[in-house]
Length: 143
Ligand SMILES: [Cu+2]
Image (cartoon, rainbow, N blue to C red; front, side, top):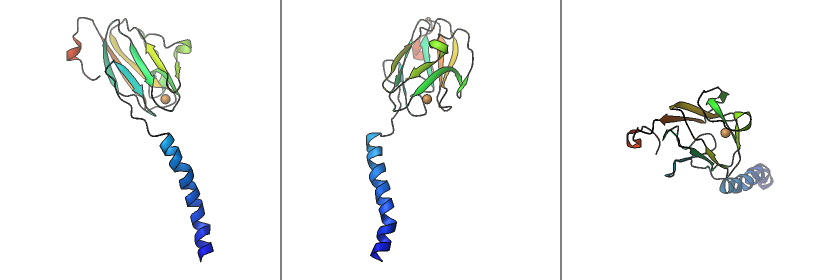
């Protein structure tokens, strides 16, 4: 009876010993919008889904997750060409590893631009670029 109990419980104990420390080392990251206008990146989402900036401004994308993200213009991991969108770098993609801080811009043309992660379809960010004459106090979304 004891042997039988051990035989069935040992695998569970082993699984618990392995997974509990992993959860402690890699707690789920909480994406959030910070007050300096930057956007964090979690496992499968940006810290905000929408952000408003004035023409001439840049945004800062911070990879606060333990995951690799590949930021491209587009929606739900599907790249799409968007005239007026600043280049994201080589092949118009930004590879973001853990801890990466990416200043992106400036946005010179008013419009609604969409960014996504080619690895995580749930990661979608819309950047609304408004003329400098538009007071940011009236903007929607963002902070
Ligand atoms: Cu990603």
